[in-house]
Length: 456
Ligand SMILES: *Cc1c(COP(=O)(O)O)cnc(C)c1O
Image (cartoon, rainbow, N blue to C red; front, side, top):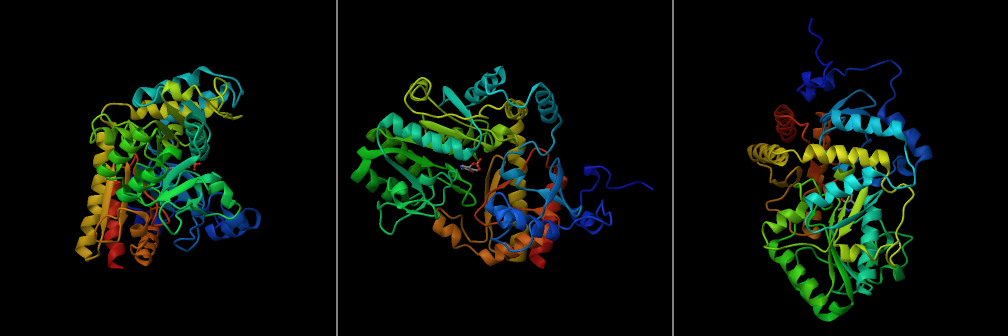
């Protein structure tokens, strides 16, 4: 008898693998048991809130291992993974070249707290793909990179105010945990306890894709604005593109008023295209460039690594050259940089993004097709290896509209897909990710699962 299921590739059908888990020792711990145990020692049982499944309900899956496009939970169930650690795993899990680079680096030492040649190589590799930046500094998380970029923008301009948009997430630094106030151009309110109102008094929160609001805020306070920070394709409200007129106008206003335009490409960088979302907009708006860029996720290939970069003129304001302080014990970590470098090397190969984009588009088209068959209102969009979908008639343009889409239907769909071995993001305001390891058969199995889910 042929032993099916020994190879990850041998089992294209997630439904089948669900009914006959590969591993089932008598003492296997269930996800529920692990969740109960986790909740005793970790708040909510998780180290980052969305993992707790609060938005969709149910028990989070505790992941035991992952390979290629698949993850297996503690109960031995296999899932086609469309989260990819929230974006970093663009090559899929356990890519051989990345694994080898990490293993080699680990043998040479985990951390030195001193400069290494690999940091130069990674900085060079990032700069080579992103024409708007001449220097980068490496840090350990997207939060840290975003927070540092804002300090740099304030240091560079000598101004205090920052503009952000509702629904964009830039990490959990105090000044960025803000929601819009009731009136336009009023100060925002903290969205988290523990953030004093004084700390967010310089953060202005506007509606995404709202041209009037950005005009008005610059007209009234333009000379006090240090920077405008944006997720160019917002993946923390599912998938919402900044419109070309909106992007064009922000760029003009920033230039006119001497404010810096900060692109938070933690999610989109090296994900939607090799040159990030800024290369997508540069293709639509001649000469377009942000002033400061923030990266994370893909550039670490799954290790804690992030970066921010800008022109040499701006970056030289950072310590030790300039007055803006910024530091990190594990910054430029040798194992993390090895992982990032090996990842960038793979994704820089010719044709990589063409193939990834085509695959991601085929997924969104497949899902749209079966939704149409089932008479379910559904719209989707994608760029490179990032996608989003909504149970709505047209693509939302801002956070309010995203949150008004059919949440109960999303939650039912999420669970119906999870039961069928497809792991989508457990909240309707999150983007999804396809990796180079996803094959046509995985996409087909996902679309089949969605057809069954819509029927159910
Ligand atoms: C994930 C993310 C961050 C935060 O990065 P962490 O590494 O989780 O701190 C910041 N900005 C954007 C756009 C993100 O998607």
